[in-house]
Image 1 (cartoon, rainbow, N blue to C red):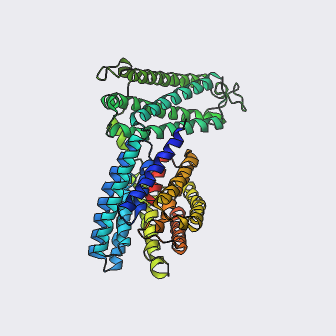
Image 2: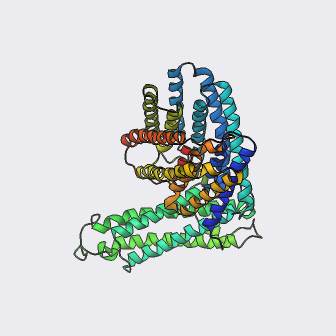
Image 3: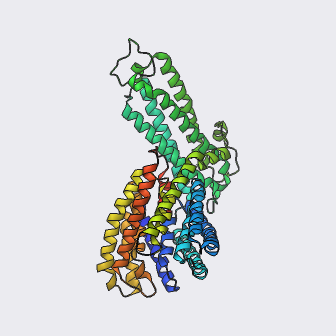
Length: 519
C-alpha cells in the first residue's frame, strides 16, 4: 500500500511532466513556466488552498502584465525614470504582500511585472508576446494540476479540515491534562517543558490560522462542511480562544520556574521543579481554576466536533454541544487580524529595505560588466520582495539547497540530458527526478529543499525544453552564478539592515514566499 507521501509525489510528478509535454506539444517556448505553476499549487496544504493560489496566480499575472506594459510604454526611453518607477512599485507591493489571504497575489503580480519588463527587452511587441505566453503557460499548469489532483487519489478539503480540527482539539486536550498534572504536582515544570508547551501552542495556532481559510473558500464537493460552515467557524474560534488562554496561563506561570515572580516563602524549595512548591497556595488555586475553565471549553469542543461528524443527514439541525460553547470574538474581526498580523511600521520599514536593495542592485548592473544582460536586476527584484519577510535560517537553508540541488541538476544536464532524443525520454527524466525530490523531501523540515530542487530542475535545464533544444553548460552556469550573486546582494542588504525578530509564520507561508521568488 502506497503511503500518502508517495501518492503526493506521484501526483505532482505526473502533473509536472504532463504540463511540460503538453507545452512542448503546443509549440510554446517556455514549458518550465507551466511546470513551476504545478509546483506552486502542489505545495499548498489542501486542494482548496491550491485553487485559491491558482486564482491569485492568474489574476496576479493579469495585473503584473498590465503594470509591465505601462512601465515599458511610458518609461522605457528614460532608464532612471523606469528604474525609479519600478523601485516605487516594489515598495508598494512589498507593504501589501503581508496580507495572509491575498499576499501571494501582490507578490506574483510584482514578479510577473519584473519578468515581462526585463525579458521583453523593454519592447512593447515582445512584451505583449511574453504576456500571452505567460498566461497560456499559467492556465495550462492550473488545468493539468486540477485534473490530476481531482482524479488521481483525490483528497477532499473537507476531510483535511476535519483531520486538522481533530488534531488540534486532541492537542489542546493533551496539553490541558499535562498542565493539570503540573499544578497537582504529578509532573515537573521546568524551562524545557515550558518551551515545549509554548512551541506546541504556536504550532496549533498556525494550524488554525492556515486551515481557517478553508471555511472562507468555495467548498465544492464538501456539502456537509458548506452547510455547517457557521458551526465550524464557532468551533475554530473557540479553539483559538482556548489557545490564547493557555498562552496567557503559561505566561503567568513562566516566572515561577525561577521563583522570580513571587516573594520567596519558607515552604518553597529553591531547586524544586514542581509548581506546588514554587508558588503559594493562592496562586496554585487561581491557576487550577483557569485550567478547569479551559478544560471545560476543550471538552465541549470535542463533543461538538463528534456531534457534527455524526449529523450527515441533519445538516440544518441545531446542535446542543455547539450552542453551549461561548465565544467572545467575531469571525470577521479575527480573520482581519490574522490577515494583517504585521504592524504598518514594520511593513513600511521592509518596503524601504527592498527599495534600497534594488537601488544597489541596479547600480551594480549599470556600472559593472555583468553577463546575461537583464538577468541580474530581474533576479534581484524577484528575490528582494520575497526574502524581506524571511528569517535568516530560511535564507541559509535556501542557499545550501541551491548548492546541492544545483550541482546535481547541472551534472545530469551535462552527462545525461544530451543523450535524450525522444519526448518520452525527456518526460521520464523529469518524472523520476521530481518523484525522488518530492518523496525524499516530504518531511516539513525539508520543505524548503523540496521547492528549491523542483524549481532548479527546470530553471537550470530550460534550454533542453526549447522547441529546438540546446545544451550549453555556459548558459546554465551563468544562471547559477547570477542567482547566487543576486541572493548574496539581497541577503547582505536585507539581513544586515533588519532586526532579528521572532519568526512565527507557519510553514505554508514560508513556502509560498519561496515559491513565488522562484516562479
